[in-house]
Image (cartoon, rainbow over all chains, first blue to last red; front, top):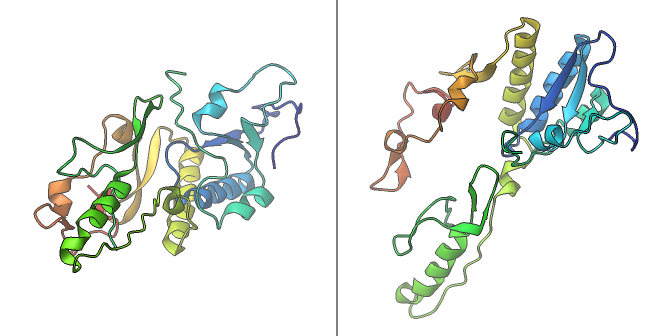
Length: 103
Length: 149
């Protein structure tokens, strides 16, 4: 469930603390269950949770301009979204071999 | 059934087997293709041991079939604990740490323990290299042996 194109994404929303989740390196069967666990717990502790898509590539490609379409780089996470993937392997946020220091 | 690990070397070939010459941003080439070479060799040498007839060999590259396979019970329980342990660290404002299993117990270690050096499997500790088999010595060992140094 990506943000609609053109939707302006904000890392910070008011005073609510935000946790970002990024999956890098190789896939493993337990990665989605880990994302699911930390997302649900963080939401219930009052955090906002953001998923960074495609590993470090999501942060490297992120466009900070107002109104930029960052739906390929970041997405808001909800219990409904992560509950759908908790029983599947790999990472639904995707991963990449991007090395941020070089990129 | 023959299982071949990526990175394995054939004595008759130079070096390891790679998918292509292409490298990623870390300068690493993607390992792959050793299974096809072993399959071809099995087929080639099989007549010597099969009354002169070649055997059929089917090679299947596992790769992401395994890595992104559905989680089993352990794959669900441990990450559930890891996710909660990670959030506990955030709540305690302890940053720069990595959740882990240490000697069979949940724990956390400084993140530098994985970023400071390249982690490789201690082959002499875990494998009988003469028989090409793991060392089956589990008495008193933790559940997650490879991660418990």
